[in-house]
Image (cartoon, rainbow, N blue to C red; front, side, top):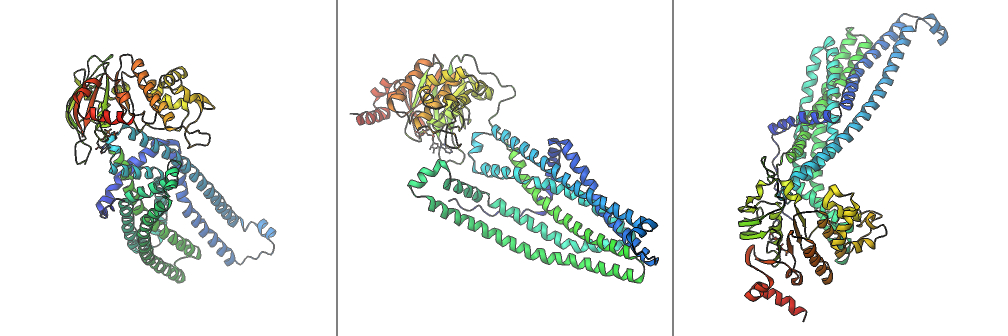
Length: 619
Ligand SMILES: Nc1ncnc2c1ncn2[C@@H]1O[C@H](COP(=O)(O)OP(=O)(O)OP(=O)(O)O)[C@@H](O)[C@H]1O
């Protein structure tokens, strides 16, 4: 397991406040998701913001009225008589008003939840789609970078977790309006109490802000471990791995590793939560103290006769609410600042820019390709790799030629193919297509003209027809084309064995799926290559699981059907390789020899040696 990520230092106050700059774009996106829902949610909240003070004030009026009635010395024996006398009219009216307010408050609360739920679902979906769209633009190299994977992981979590940020922000705005209303009310009675309240709350706020930052740091520093946990969980419990896990009895190994890692994470979290609870309680007590000092003061003024009983309840109530609200606002503010830090992750993922892009003046790939590809002193090195994967490559891939690549594992065959398809750009030298650098061509057009099936092709858990159709998505519904591609690859026989034929779901992931053998999957994948009417076809060892006859047939048919197409084949089987027009021998990233099968055998180098080895096995 990799070394622990070095602890990242706590984000500074400036960083935290700086993260608040993420809020305006965040709000803009929410607004853009649905103006109607955002407007409704905000409007309802504004209404709700004024309800608490209205309720409390009516409560005060009710008490004052009741006290007045008692003081007036009126005596009623029966409710009916009292009602008819009209003496209770005002009290009744006030009670009815308070009742209406209570109903309105409940109703608007539910409506707000409803709007928020709809809005959050839509926003989460929109962000997920944006995430997928952006990920699609990134370079393969980006994906292979562990840092980017961490970032993607955090960004993915953000799409899920950020919605309470929205509710929180809106809630904050609502509370702020309520606070202003209460503060205006209190200002009329006892202005300096508000100051007292604010001072009493500052320590709690600072504490919250501090712990939120620690929380973020912890979560940030643990991203690689969290991904490992996720990985272990998957390894320990998935169809893809179940077979091997059982045979090697790996479950205990995975579980032990999971436990070890998750325990460490748990302990770190627990320590932080403990400290947070302790300091939180202490600091909140200060706020409570402020409240009771104020309460005592109001009680004293009431006893002195400055305030009525109604005033006392109104003030005490306002005060209690104001304290809760201010505390909530301050704590909420620091939480929002904390969450805005997480938004940083989302936005920094969106800020990753691909390097492999089309130039503005990009040109179209020639139809047909006239001369072919030329590698000129091409070198490529994977980021942070100790040695070059390919170096000093000089060769041509002529239009219409079938070229085979051979070489031992790790020689660089796949890397060469990736360069040809512009999944990477060379670090040294250049690759020309009909005399112009590959980088001058429009990327999409280039990819549309090259059909590649890699050795680790994807097994889509879709229908058999769709598995072939993905080779040319815009022809996904063209059944005749799919069938023709299947025939060319010998996949039609595979499909014929499926109960639902081309409509059969394949793979084990879903209930109705039927799994295929390794070779059957490969035939389907090869059909995918035929689906695409590409000028250049590349088969990177997708035939390894085919039996010898099938592979021979696949390549022979490939030769016959390629109809003047340029092709690159990678195979470890010489029976297939020898069918190529020309063979390149790669060794440790360098081009060692090139020629036809016969020429290379005559040279007696590595090719002859490997050929002899394989041939000897059959004698
Ligand atoms: N994504 C990657 N990141 C870093 N290094 C890589 C990556 N892919 C391949 N390499 C390294 O580049 C070298 C060439 O690998 P490549 O996959 O091109 O070999 P290959 O000839 O296709 O091998 P095989 O016959 O096993 O498929 C190897 O040393 C490998 O370790």
